[in-house]
Length: 70
Image (cartoon, rainbow, N blue to C red; front, side, top):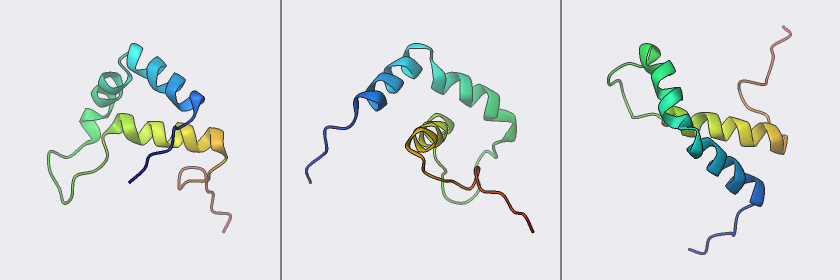
Protein backbone atom coordinates (compact mmCIF):
# COMPACT_ATOMS: atom_id res chain seq x y z
CA UNK A 1 0.00 0.00 0.00
CA UNK A 2 1.42 3.45 -0.89
CA UNK A 3 2.44 5.76 1.95
CA UNK A 4 1.93 9.51 2.00
CA UNK A 5 5.03 11.70 2.31
CA UNK A 6 3.78 12.96 5.68
CA UNK A 7 4.14 16.50 6.92
CA UNK A 8 7.23 18.51 7.79
CA UNK A 9 5.84 19.45 11.20
CA UNK A 10 5.34 15.79 12.11
CA UNK A 11 8.92 14.97 11.11
CA UNK A 12 10.31 17.92 13.08
CA UNK A 13 8.28 17.00 16.16
CA UNK A 14 9.43 13.38 15.93
CA UNK A 15 13.09 14.45 15.72
CA UNK A 16 12.74 16.86 18.65
CA UNK A 17 11.03 14.28 20.87
CA UNK A 18 13.56 11.60 19.92
CA UNK A 19 16.49 13.92 20.64
CA UNK A 20 15.27 14.52 24.22
CA UNK A 21 14.42 10.82 24.88
CA UNK A 22 10.71 11.59 25.23
CA UNK A 23 9.62 7.92 25.17
CA UNK A 24 11.88 6.93 28.08
CA UNK A 25 10.78 9.97 30.08
CA UNK A 26 7.04 9.32 29.62
CA UNK A 27 7.39 5.59 30.30
CA UNK A 28 9.20 6.33 33.57
CA UNK A 29 6.45 8.73 34.68
CA UNK A 30 3.61 6.34 33.69
CA UNK A 31 5.15 3.17 35.13
CA UNK A 32 3.38 3.40 38.54
CA UNK A 33 0.00 3.68 36.78
CA UNK A 34 0.41 0.77 34.33
CA UNK A 35 -0.65 -2.77 35.11
CA UNK A 36 1.93 -5.41 34.21
CA UNK A 37 -0.52 -7.19 31.87
CA UNK A 38 -4.30 -6.90 31.61
CA UNK A 39 -6.17 -7.66 28.42
CA UNK A 40 -4.91 -6.52 25.05
CA UNK A 41 -1.69 -4.50 24.97
CA UNK A 42 -2.19 -0.75 24.84
CA UNK A 43 -0.30 1.91 22.94
CA UNK A 44 3.13 2.80 24.27
CA UNK A 45 2.86 6.04 26.31
CA UNK A 46 5.14 7.99 23.95
CA UNK A 47 2.96 7.15 20.94
CA UNK A 48 -0.22 7.94 22.87
CA UNK A 49 1.01 11.42 23.75
CA UNK A 50 2.27 12.03 20.20
CA UNK A 51 -1.21 11.21 18.88
CA UNK A 52 -2.73 13.77 21.23
CA UNK A 53 -0.11 16.41 20.44
CA UNK A 54 -0.68 16.05 16.68
CA UNK A 55 -4.46 15.94 17.22
CA UNK A 56 -4.28 19.17 19.19
CA UNK A 57 -2.35 20.99 16.48
CA UNK A 58 -4.56 19.55 13.73
CA UNK A 59 -7.76 20.52 15.59
CA UNK A 60 -8.91 16.92 16.10
CA UNK A 61 -11.01 16.42 19.24
CA UNK A 62 -10.28 13.52 21.56
CA UNK A 63 -11.73 12.06 24.71
CA UNK A 64 -9.29 14.25 26.66
CA UNK A 65 -10.60 17.46 25.13
CA UNK A 66 -14.33 16.72 25.39
CA UNK A 67 -16.21 18.02 28.41
CA UNK A 68 -19.52 16.92 29.88
CA UNK A 69 -21.81 19.79 30.84
CA UNK A 70 -24.52 17.63 32.08
